[in-house]
Length: 145
Image 1: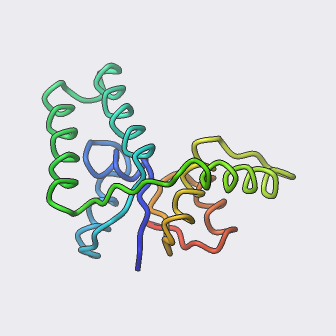
Image 2: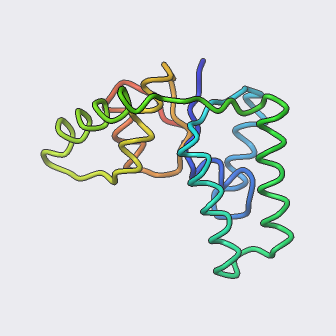
Image 3: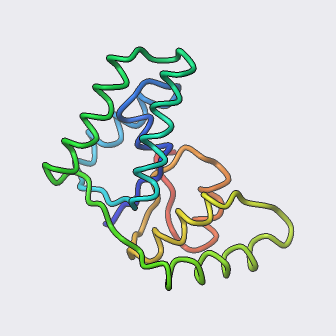
């Protein structure tokens, strides 16, 4: 099964937050290579830096988290995938137009789901409930739950 990890999953796995134990438990139990987009990876890096700026983690914890993410990419546990913008934005616009009739979704959530669909992922790894709802409405499974 192909899994797409969004930024919330990556932040929880590599840093410390309310979902960290769940993220670690999920990945350890599945032992799976996961895919993510460069956009989600960047969002995770930025979120980890923001945790340090907000004094939620130390500078050493920030460094360790960012280095671990890099190491996972280099060792092949995380595959960074590119979704060409000529496919990403039309897909994102379709998702926005189709799913934003009675509820709204954030632009990043829509872009992550569009990326997951383009990568032929079967499941999205996210702790963002709204993003999970959008993904499920497009036929993806959502984890961890």
